[in-house]
Amino acid sequence: MHDHDHGLQADLDQMLKLSVGRRKSLLWLMAGSAAALPVLGCGGGGSDTTTSASGTSSGSTTAGSSSTGSSTGSGGTGTSSGACSVIPEETGGPYPGDGTNSNSSGVVNVLTMSGVVRKDIRSSFNGPSGTPAGIPLTIKLKILNANNACGNASNFAVYLWHCDREGRYSLYSSGVTDQNYLRGVQEADANGELTFTTIFPGCYDGRMPHVHFEVYATLAKAANASNRIKTSQFTFPMASLNEVYATTGYGTSATNLNRISYATDNIFSDGYALQLASMTGNTTDGYVATLTLAVVA
Image (tube, rainbow, N blue to C red; front, side, top):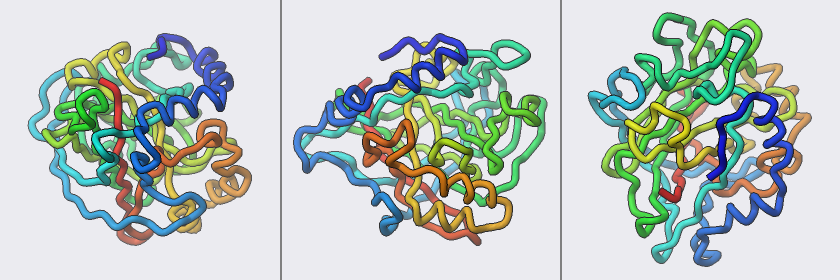
């Protein structure tokens, strides 16, 4: 695990220095065989995998304190013959908001804020009250423990964040530095499953659309970014991206998406099979993104 206690420039430098060979090694590290690879979707707009799941909301607390409930969801198994492929380690980028870097006002850390433990991350919390517009998106994650025969990583926790429809990150981007929306922490249930309610992120220039997340062994440890055991990102099938970005409000995202691809993205260009969410839904009712991910705990 790498030391992430650094500033904005170091985060950017780290992103640029990630070599293809190094990340591919991580991608295949835990694969016992070709059959062990959980293909969670198809690149270039392949057909979506149908998945149904439901969730229950957790109470709003500070990361590290107990929530009043847990979320449930379902996803692919991601295992084969007792082996699973560990999701690649990725940079947290320049906008983590987890206490490891600063904005113009100083160190930014939502993990210590009251209310950060929540299922619905659409609105700002702990003072700010802004809510960004966008097509509804439910994110369902299932965590596997590669050190425990790829069994369910029960009671692990995830801090998740992403940009808004305009490609802005709360706390950092111009116009939304006073907001902290689209950020939150959830504790997994006994099956290693958790759910976030959010909006479909936009596509800003130079990156394929993506969602950032950090995994922690317990909710208590999620109060401090130095405890994270995995930092990674996931993305969406092209078919879903094209559908969403054809709707009102996502026009700039459509333009930016036309200038980038998985092959040229500086994170996903060396492979993204373990980081591609399965999708169901539509632009009217919203979407459900499902991802099974394995970590070494």
